[in-house]
Length: 604
Image (cartoon, rainbow, N blue to C red; front, side, top):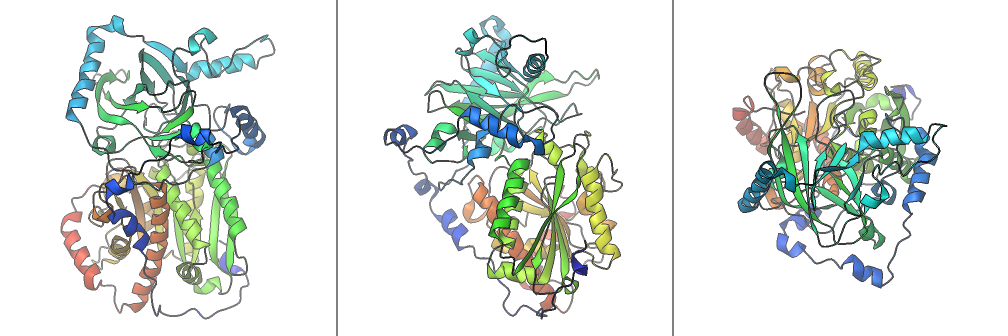
């Protein structure tokens, strides 16, 4: 907040953009327009690479656990983590291969349903043995740490050693992990139960766990049996994510879409709430074939992006800076309920006075399970500190105030939607409590401070993930005067970003969303361009990328497109003589306005 009071040399900021930088889509379109089949190239197997001796220096699991214990002081979590997930240590690079939406097979779905019916008909044929129980793991660990404990087996494996070789091994005692229980149902089939959010009895969606002791070439079936939403993009081509240590040893350090016969359906389990009306759960079922014996693999709902990854990325950004041109400040917005630091990033240029600039406030990850939002924010930050001409122009025109993770506690503890108080922080913006909702209280205070000092943000945008829709789109707030000012940025993004869908945008202000960041910042604080950017977990059904599942490169690229959209928006504002839209942008907005009143914004 103090930035614009700092003494900075005045510079000539152009009053208009002589040639507004247009977003280059060539790389995206080139990747998308090529035949999907041509992208499905065959990758050499890990065994072939291992035979060639192409091994990378991969730390052992014990080294990773030790590494975590040395660095773990910076994390405050509800339980003590016993390990660090290897993907967090080794990193992730986006696949060069296009990952298509998976085709549905009605015959396979019928087969799965009949197998579930057989459970009820022939219960004696089932193994039905718990092979992983987080409660037991934590209880065993607590007993091991007592002075009276003379001996203790591996706390991550509550079963005797004689049983360990007969089934898969599971673990979720790491940052952002979520798996409560694994039940061995049939020889190669497992029911999985997810943790609810801390201090909640619901919000079961995000999963992230480790699995090992697999046999190669065997078809394993996993059933996540306590999902809550009535439908999911898993029924429309989406697949879970898989990360393999053996593949990483061969240099293929990436998450990839995996799983066949993916099926999301209602089951016969229900919550024991004591209410007369039963609320039934849903099952996410998928098959996995692990190609390597004795591998260590991770399965996740979406590409994980942890609090530790954020801190590492912010540290890496500082080493890339050209401080003679870029003002960059990484400070603490506040401490969270658990005492974790919530970073606040400021980016602008050093050559012009901030007094002549407008402010852009961006935030992300208020819902911990929406990791795709963090990947987009990563793209935004990397673009803003780059040497690209558009980035230099953005820094000349704007001061960026960025809160890349509004809910660090939830991210650390593997929550899907809530904070440690058990509250959805994106429903607390009307009256946030400084103790229970410190990050929202501080974020709203920052924007209030800017407004009170005559620096009302030019744009505010909160980045989210959406589990029921494809594409990337925006929710805005309709101008009562009918100027259409709120539709300009979405229309510009639709013209440049291949995954963005203007048709999916909504500008209705629903009663159920009145306490969200988007609506409060617009209605109470007077920011006309107040948005929620929603991103699919799945893929796109439009344009040159139609039929693709989204990857981290696409998400980071969307961050670049968003930045360039801001620059185009600035040029549009300077060039326009009124608030009315012009040309193709107006045509799109008018066509869309006819239906946006009835469109539901759903999640947010």
